[in-house]
Image 1: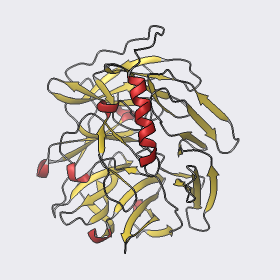
Image 2: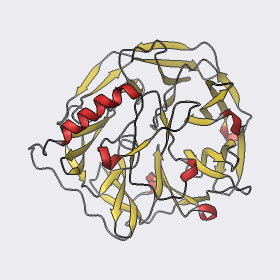
Image 3: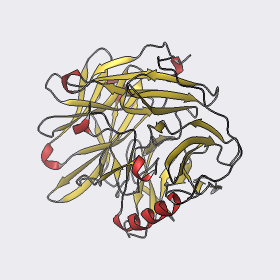
Image 4: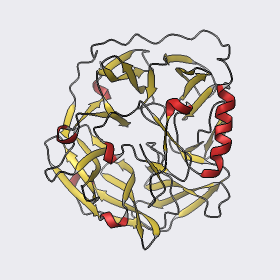
Length: 402
């Protein structure tokens, strides 16, 4: 998985199990949910993507310090359910080809319904297209961006029939990002909403761009270089962009919340309500790397030997429990899907499988014995199998899980 500034070139990817920092990317960069040139190639279970150069030295120091610590003492935690070798679910998946008729490679970025996705198709010449893909096998082109502009498409968000995304290009050496909108259910031609996007951050969360109450919202870097952020919003139909400064590095969460970006082992998390200014400060153990939203925190536990376990708890620190051991790695940046389901890549002798932990029932189900490029948004989780012309995307409506 690669990291880029809008219009820029890939930065180095560092394996999660090398640094044990899971769940986020430094603001100012975006992580493509699937590196298009590597679709169909088995990835390591998870990746970390580092951003600005300056904080890396401090961040690595924190990691090195944390890795010298042993596992802190704590009360016994409930063990997760054992993971079966044979998939334990019976619901059917929706499958679509990962290669278009012209040979372009397709990667879903968001499922609009269990049968319809929107994503990016990358041609051999580097041309990028925004595509609607349906289970019937049809592909509808919404936008086409020439390879010479170093195009990147991110920030997909949907509300009913309204679909938006952001396009980043470089022209004459100058990067620019624009916001686009369409009515996806009738395949209407997209229209540009605004060019006044600032320097948006795309870090692989479902809330990189949010549509709420008729407004599109995203996070941008402070153009003054203060280290703070901006919450930028525009009406769905277009108009002036409003800007609210934030003191510190945040990402969007469930409206109206923002949350501090993951900073490393033992670093606390702050949730801020933009409507009421309510703050929730989440304290974690020195060997925890936390990712939080207003409902749950997912904690990656490490010690000097490496990854120990994955826990969850409420943001107020209550209800902490273990959902997996060192064999599992979170597959999405967000804490959980539908505030309930946690997809995990699980190392098995036959390969890397996909399991899903139900935080409501406490059960763990093996969804696929082998799965690559796992992603999830809303109530849909999807993954790929095969490579090259045999690439297939499989999606599962979590509402169908028994």
